[in-house]
Length: 190
Figure (tube, rainbow, N blue to C red):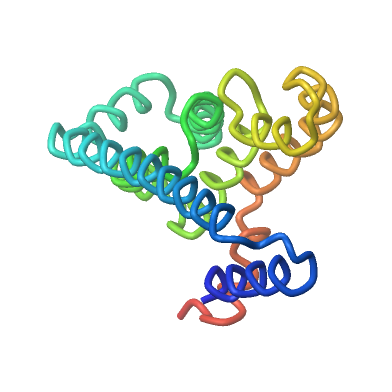
């Protein structure tokens, strides 16, 4: 609904205020948006197939077994999961990464005693940090195309934010009340 409202607003603004809306520009915008949507849907389709295969092959059981052989301490296992998710976030865009990893990792973190909502916060925050981190930081490329700066210059501007984001990630990971305060307020645990 918000996307439709934004499109209508952009069309009205472009046509009535800026007066640069014509059939050629409109056709070009439709073609570009169709190609972008098709590319995103292809990525999501491939990620869905990959997620199915990983789930069918019992990767969660293997991952849980590997984590438990590495260490018995939950905080260290969560740290390893964070490092893994940060690496994935640097290489794969958020939605495909979630489609691939949530079915695999949710049983693992549930066995560790992590609330699913808490894990959702952990995963999203890791992938958020990955968006602004090379080599495949999608946010860097988007900002580069919008601002006209090189990807290197955009990354230099993002560097001061990475350490505070990592500190927030550790806070979210190891203090569950940070991410569960509002859900527990709305739906009290019995």
